[in-house]
Length: 477
Image: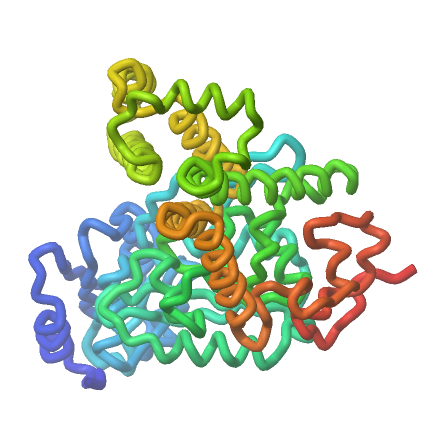
């Protein structure tokens, strides 16, 4: 619906679009005889700023009725004009008041939105000893400013769009022009435009639409809360996506090896970074396979245990009424329940929960003969190993359960079959033409210099071949 220039008619049309009781308005007259009316959303508009930047300057306005003339009389640095009433209504709901008057050709939107921000601080999922400690927050403008501060180049493109029929969430597509593969940029942009949903409360909603296989076992979109990691991925040739209201940024294309890496790896000697990555990989494999191998050995292959260890285990499980697979399954289930409870409960109850979990459900259950000591130890080590790679906890915990069920049914053969299925799933998954297991499947020796093994910075003169960047060289000399 277009603006007519009749104040009463245009205001009535806007009120029909905005019938909520917290949408307020007030009138005031300028010295030149024009009566202005401001429409704003009370909870999200800074009324003090509105009075300072809009009302006071216009009290002395003596110009014409065109939007350009009225705009020159305002003291606000952020102004936009719209001739469509639906767009004006959307700006009011976003917290930006709309200025109306008789004879206008366009309605003026003034940027006086009330902003509630938390401080930029180190994110809980990216704690580092060395390196930057800044993290994204829930405001997309602050997040884009953190990126701009690190990449001071005109090649950095940030394309904004609104997604969500009712939430109208700002989404930013970020990439380096000439470095990111154009096909990937267009592919991400196409999928973002195709999203038709009521609202986007978090960037995780976007991740489901940006992957080629939504029901795959392994995730296909990278995530980070650190601006330095996000910018490093853009420099490699990836595309980034930010959503207003979410501190988690998305990066595409995603490689499985990314989650074995950490931002701190690039601020320590290469040998130390390599050892840390190998340790993360071993911890993740142990977390997934240790419970399954224990159950398989106990049920089908007792000779896999050394003799002294076998005698110890036999003494521990002698009076246990449960089968090894059922016992391990119940202990894992107990661990998952404790984990969920510790996250959801208030922080001041956390100590009591730790005592209950360690003493009542752990030691007391062993003494009562419900669980064996080796099962508790193996599950505890498995739980610790999962957190060595925190970005893959959801996937590895499910894989651990599948391996346990396979081991309890078919023993070591079940573990081998489940592993083959997992490798088939990993090798068959790709997104935007990039294989998930690259640079190992298919093998790309050049990209292996920054995979599990970390070479020195001087050896990384070329961008990853996997990402198909048109600008292959990132370092001279």
